[in-house]
Image (cartoon, rainbow, N blue to C red; front, side, top):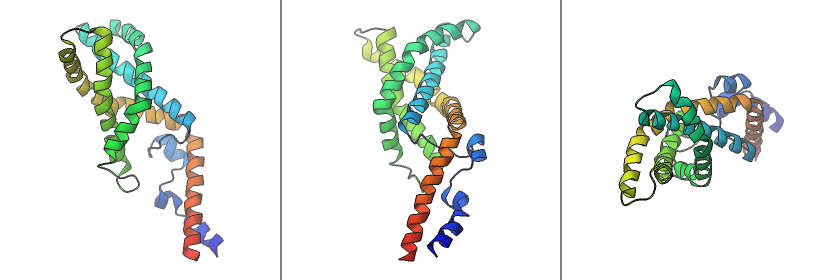
Length: 207
């Protein structure tokens, strides 16, 4: 009886539990986050590099008076070390702070996953932009009696681009690449989690 109940529940697992198929993950119809430490490392590295490069393109272009082909190489050189700061700070503090702030306003499993992603991304940028602006001020402007003013000015200049780049470019690109690289593992993980939920539910209903 319990086996039949599990089988019937499995027929509804995609729509009821939101477990994506291979095609859904490949097409990016479901936002799936890292499940293992290795996946988190890859996801974080890709996000750090793409975010850093986008911000360096913006800042180098601003310093050079506009966007041109001469911007790409200097921005890439600066990205080579700035992305390390992004990765370390986001791994230690940024992601945790972003999720904690976001989950005060949205609830995983209850609210729309799209809005949860938007909230987490926005709150993470809200922490990372001042933090990275502080580091950029130290590296590019140095310590002076105008340090705090320079830091605040850097935050104001960077924040609009940071939130725009994260929400519309870096975030979607990284999630697409992540789903493409790990699509089989993500489906397998989701299937195992769904099976556990189904078995627990069947056992509970059978009691």
